[in-house]
Image (cartoon, rainbow, N blue to C red; front, side, top):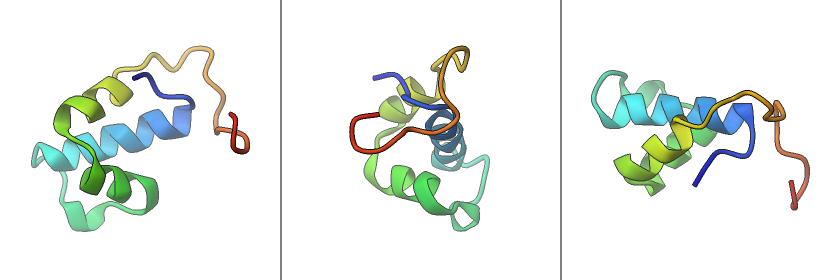
Length: 64
């Protein structure tokens, strides 16, 4: 599943880094910490590999 925003893509990348042991989990904050807790490495890879070109900076509201 591709990321819906640049912020989501960045958070997935940070969570993936922690999941792989490159970053300390205790250094994660907000969405990246939640993603680390609730998503598999494969799911995080799918989000993190999304091309940022054309993505909004942040998702808007419930449907965005």
